[in-house]
Structure formats: structure tokens, C-alpha cells
Length: 245
Length: 245
Image: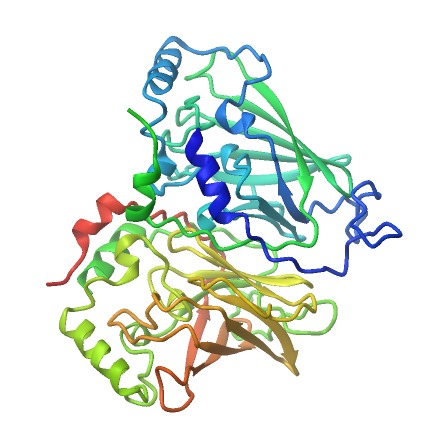
């Protein structure tokens, strides 16, 4: 995916802001191994800017050897997308990256903002957001299919568990083109290990596209003393940068 | 702006979702005249889904004073855009409405999520967001010009005051095309009058585009017991709906 490198160079100019709530080592640097912060109710506070610097998950969610249990049509579609170098990827037309791949773009980190009633996921990528509701509401019985789905979250011990349904079938799970259907149910388990490290275990539960649920664990690093930059996708300009057959 | 009418028919299907924090009258309906809610620190809580009460500001952000005090070049540019019926407007290319007009689209409400460190504006339109930082940081000495600028906020009594700089000169202040330059500084004074109403006084300071600072005072109504719906702008489809010469 050479074009990602190009975008990386253009965007890697995050402003440096020394923030008050960052634990520091004696030399003043952020202490990423410090204990994780907690909210007033004693739960881990996931708030912060996070990034997976390893583009391999974006290229192929299953890069580390996981066997992906494709249904036949999904295997064929994935093969076709691979052979055409992902030229029809939605983000090539300024349409959203989905769940989980919007969190996997190394050039564009994301910010979690945890509040009592909702946890926000602000993506630098295309300047879009997700809401994970924690105010007790259930997933709606009927949902209009959407790019980013409808999400509710709950705590299981120190792990924040997010259920998302109501997807359309247009997003790709990664840039390589692992597909999903509108039956896609994403189960994300966020676990903040310490101040600087967050693991996300994501389970892909989509019986139309895969013969059984499969899961991947993606590690994220805290991006200290930085702020998201605005990254509005401008169609006409970005299309020429895209690579494909 | 015919297409807004079309969009309304397509989009105005907000879900009904009774929320636990909505004050109610004895018959169970939302009590919009109840007092404004407060944060634990005693400040008003602006959190909620808001919708501009009067669509005229999207057509003329200077409606309160008749016309903006344009510099001659800005008057000429506005005349040209208005004569073209707003053709070339950024939102036509799926690029965001800016500040303030992102809040002025009647068919696309916005949600405020207030936390101790940041007030987040979630726009239904195009699934974009904006952050107003309240963690004590200053405006950066240099900013990359951007569509939404860089915003910090503080409380002045019960009024939340946001200052924004760092705009590019490409966003329009309203749909017919009142222009601004990169010098633009916007001061927004948010005042929640009661549970159901909020007023924002917006002051434009841009000596390159205007002969003096000027303001608009705009009323917003809370949309109770509902949720934003996802609204992704898909360039190829939406352009066909555009009106212009």
C-alpha cells in the first residue's frame, strides 16, 4: 500500500501540546509504563489518543497467521479485491473506513473520550466519529444499515466490551478487502494495560460471510502530548493518489 | 436550496429513544421548560442534541443586522457566489459546513458532549466532529489552516465562551457564500436558557473581510429522547441533487 506512505508524510505534523494529566518520568518525558488512570467510579479510563503504528493490521487483519473461515462467496470476493490491489476500497472515494479498520490506519490516530453516558471515538481519519452508548439503552430492534453501525458498551471487570450491529455491507474490515455482510456483529474488548498501552480484541461474528466467528488482538500505543489534526478527505484531490489496476 | 428539502424527506427519521436524564411533565412528556442541568462543578451542562430553530441563518448568517459589513472585495465575491446560486459551495463536494454554518442546517442537528477537558460537537451532517478544548491549553501560536479551526473554551459565569482561530479561507459562513479569510477569529458564547433552549451569540472578527466585528444571536432547541443518525455524504450520489447554474 505505497499510497499510505505518501499520506503519512503529508499528515505527520501533529501539534505538540504538553497536557496536564500525563504522568512523567524524572526527565519530564511521558511515563507510558505508569499505572492506568481510573474514572471516579473506579473503572479504567480509556480516554486518550491511541495509535497502532504497525500497518500490517490495516493491510491484512489476519496477517499474523490467523485462519480466516471464509464462506465461499467471501473468499472469492477477497481474492478479487486482492487481485485488483484494492482499487475499489471505500476510502479511495472519501467514504469511511469501518470497524475495525478506521482504528488501524497508522498515519491517523484516534481519540477515546470516556464519559458516563457515552464513550466517543474520534477518528483523525476523515474527521469522523463513533458513539458507544453506555447510558443503559439496548441496541435498537430495527436499524438503518450504516457505515459505522450502532454501538453499546458495558464493563466486564476492567474490560470495556462494545457490541456493534446495524452495519451496511459496504465497509471493508481492512484495506486488503476482507468483506463482511449486513449480518456483521462486531464485539470489541478494550483493555488498557497501563498508561501507555491498550489492547483491542475484536471478534468478527458474521455467519453470512464467515463459517464461524474469528478474532484478532491489536495493540495500541498512547500518543502523549499530541492532538488530533483535522484530516478532511477532499475527493477530487485524493483520488489521483490512489493505487490500483 | 431545494436539495435541503429532499434531504429532509430522506433523513428526518430520528429514532424515539426515551432517555433517563430527560425531565418530564406529569404526563411523561419531556419538560423542555425545566431548568438547565448542571455539571458536578456547578457549571451548566450543555450536553444534548440541538437543532437551530430558524433556518434563515443558513441562508443569511447576517440576518440579524441585514448584511455583513463587507470589505469591497468580499462584497464582490459574495455577489458573484449569490448570482451563481451558491454553486461551488464546499458541502456540494462533501466537504464540511464550517463554523458556524455546520450548526445551522435544520435537517442535521448536532450533539454537544461536555466533559471536564473538552466540549465535543458531533455533527450529524457528514459524521464530522469538532473539539473545543477546556483543559487549560492555549491557542497554538501557529496552526495549519483547517475547515473547523482550533478552538479553546472557558466559562464566563454561566456562559461558555469558545474562541476559534486557524481557519482556511475555503469554508463559507453560510450557504449563499458569505466569505471570510484566514484571519477569521470566531467567538461563540453558548448560554443554555433552560432544559430545552440554548442561545449562541457568534461574533466574527476578520479585518481582511469585514470593516468591523459583527455578531449573530441564534436560538437552538433541544431534540429530546432521540439520537443522531449517521449521514455520510457520498459524493457521486449527492452531487446530482445540487442546485446551481
